[in-house]
Image (cartoon, rainbow, N blue to C red; front, side):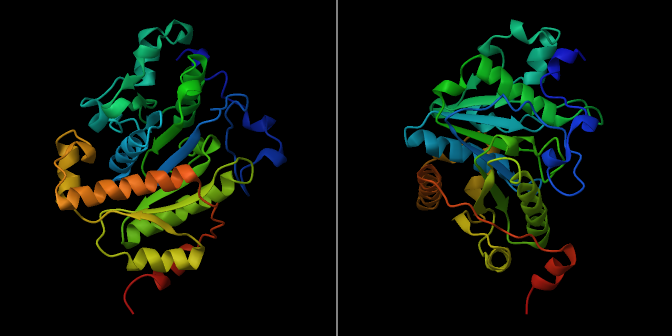
Amino acid sequence: MNDSLVEVTRVPVSSIGKKHLDGEGSVQVHMDPTVKIGTAKVFAVYGKGGIGKSTTSSNLSVAFSKLGKRVLQIGCDPKHDSTFTLTKRLMPTVIDALEAVDFHAEELRLEDFVFKGYNGVMCVEAGGPPAGTGCGGYVVGQTVKLLKEHHLLEDTDVVIFDVLGDVVCGGFAAPLQHADRALIVTANDFDSIFAMNRIVQAIGAKSKNYNVRLGGVIANRSDATDQIDKFNDRVGLQTLAHFPMLDEIRRSRLNKSTLFELEATPAVASVQDEYLRLAARLWAGTDPLPAVPMKDRDIFDLLGFD
């Protein structure tokens, strides 16, 4: 791979002073600190793999656009399927575009890697390195650098990073270095909440040196929220929105469609309204949540039925 892909983001671990570490024991490699997104509000969406982050991100992007905001959604999963309900097809990734020009980034045009989706939402799929090689964080860093060089970020009000699964290694924690608020999508079950606790740990580590703070929890695919509420009360989180186990939500993704394109039955309209409320609340600004993660063994004792 041409070194131009990573030269602005790679910092030898040996050159990172202790004051730059992201927490005790961290050996995180840092992105170029001069590459910043700018004035847009930036949200990073995390959660257990398969919990519905892409569905949540895409519908939240549309909700922001319905409020008149200029929105950019960045998918950070090698599957590059974050935005397909917006664009109706799998889009080429930034890595694909770079490979096509032999990693000479200066030859790329904006239309090579940015695509317009439903209701004007701009869509980017960062992609990732081949399995078992490289670091996804480099791809995120290069994506932001390209967007900035092409001035797209200057015309954006909201940026949403849709992040791969519950991986909170240095590479896929990279969006936290750009985000204002991190949002965690979870279901009302042990595995999802266990993953949420790990993400809380990662965000706490990043917040030592970056502006990112916890924004709150999005309960998804859950009719009840008792286990989420119990965890939130213990660690200091709060639920911002709640989406039930609704078959229309599942079918919308199978139909390559956002919920805002479905017939507004009472159930669908209720979910659309909840997304619009969430977007309005996030745009107005949320207080940072100084959550304190639990020890793994304590979650076993906390969750479940009395």
